[in-house]
Length: 133
Image 1 (cartoon, rainbow, N blue to C red):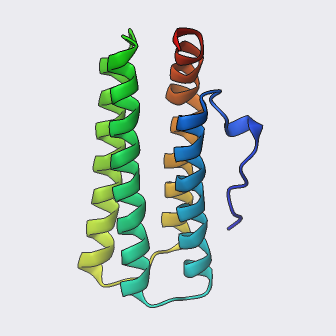
Image 2: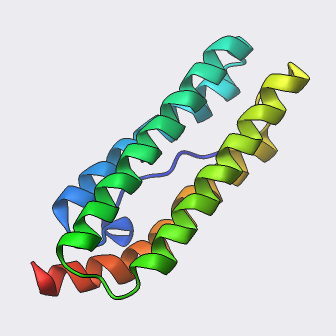
Image 3: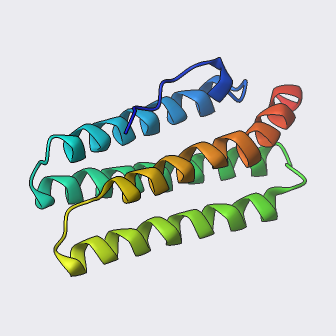
């Protein structure tokens, strides 16, 4: 599995959101490398926990910006945040309960989970915030 490489394609045009996204991409890449290196399950679980915690914080950060700038699609965006966190936590539980390591399939899920949200909802938010700020 390839790393996610940060580029302008992933930028939403708002530096503080892009900074958060770069951090999330970095943690994802750390997890990806750990899976490829067959690191112990406890280590993989710790990185996944960090990814989830950082994502929760990032979503809170975005939601604060949405409130401050009266983003009209805020409720839809927040609903997507809840769904994404729920999906990641369900994956985490499956991994912890099965005492298995994280597979390439899990990494692919997390890659889609991260990039599809940026390419869809966050680009719309970034466009709005760019004009509002």
